[in-house]
Length: 403
Image 1 (cartoon, one colour):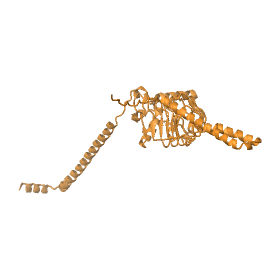
Image 2 (image 1 turned 180 degrees about the vertical axis):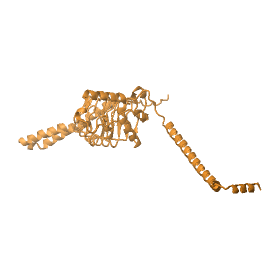
Image 3 (image 1 turned 120 degrees about the vertical axis):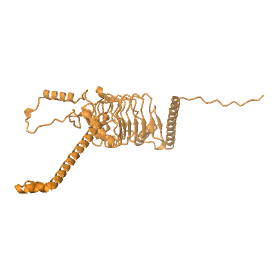
Image 4 (image 1 turned 180 degrees about the horizontal axis):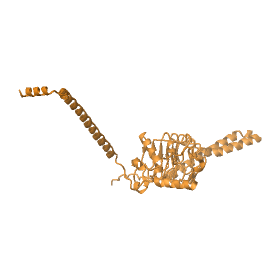
């Protein structure tokens, strides 16, 4: 009988949750072992220096040393529900059901993943323990508001992801402590208005995403305060393409002309422009609109010399504003002017006028030339016939003609 060697049994497949539990268990044992080693070394040191443990000063030193030993195992340790990768200086705390920012983060962390949790608030100086942080991912959480100093101390942060949250508004003070921020993603929130970034706030921002929010109107002031912006994503908002969006249209055209990238502003209202890109709407349809300032206010001309009492009352002013807004809406019967037809009409009219002018000039030259020739050929006979003749001369001329 021949016995064949059976292949070794394959090890069972371990799930990712089990692997994370094993890693945490190993780290815990390692910390416990380091604590035991420190305690053993301290006992040995105390055994050989037992004679010197006398007096109140030495007792105070012992208390201080014991406190240091208690805090030493936790200094720079990894949070319990997170995975720390020391070579890349990254910490992964995603999908752990966290409701607040972990406190025991390694101070040298540069990449922090906190997505897919239940974090509802970011308190002031929540990341002060990680000053070297460069990438922060807070997407897919329950953030409703951000404290003005939520990112205080993150002077090196470059990427901030806040997608899939419940943010309704943002204050410009939130980003004052982020001078190096280059990418900001605010998509899939409930933001209704962009804050005005003053001074050098977000002066190095190159990419801004605000897709899937509740924006209806955006003026150029918040966007003009971002000098380094190169990519802007505005799609899937509640854009109202009326006269108040004309300022954004002008800014976007200049932005695209300078090499900027954008996914366009797709109108949601009124119905005649629903689903169309704002940049493709011709300017002729905005002729009825009043001039708009950069902040969205209408320019009201003032006649010099008018008195203060001649100004309209608040109720009248409100009626005028409402009337101007109603006039500002695009007319349903308005039709876009075909630019090609207009140019062709101008060219044809110019050609016809030129031909007529040439024909009139040619006719004038021809008439003058003909008159000059006729005057030269018949000038002398006409001068003789005009003089009176004697009776004898007439008979002689007649005889000469008969002969």
